[in-house]
Length: 262
Image (cartoon, rainbow, N blue to C red):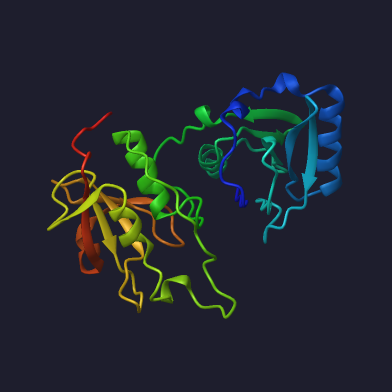
């Protein structure tokens, strides 16, 4: 499920939120709001007001609100993000990714029951088969996940502007926007001549007229030439590097990549 919001960080104490804080009256209020929204995913947040947990519903402005939600903003005193699944499914991979990114619990209403997901519990199994969502599950997100889970290296977030500007031009057509070269360089990566070690990052230019890198892949198996990447509009996948060699622009290695923590 897609989620966008302006706030970036929450107080770590929000991890203490639990389902016992949901009184019967509060549960009824949230369910009534979800029923009012109908077939669309309902969304909102829970917050503290004088020590009392309260709920605020927020309009879902997603382009496809039947199976995703976009909540423009929420206050700093929010203690949990809420949304519903009208199709009866559990937390999606994207839900887990965003819960972990936001570091705030997520509350889900599905099958007329409430379920809680804490950031520390938001584990995503497997790297292949993820749907591509800009700023949520994209090639940089995949690099972040692999580096955090395999190497205990935490790469920073960076702001993603809209994919298309008001004229409808693709973001990668802007010659002044070169985030991969800039952000990787500031996080302990250095250039190498070739991706000859596991976890080397390969920056590519996929048909961008600017010549700037617009895609990142990770070398996962040097002997077999196998990479892991998440291309625009496709599912994340393991692939053979040979096909992508012609798109390669820069090879990077992290200074701590040799300290594998598996």
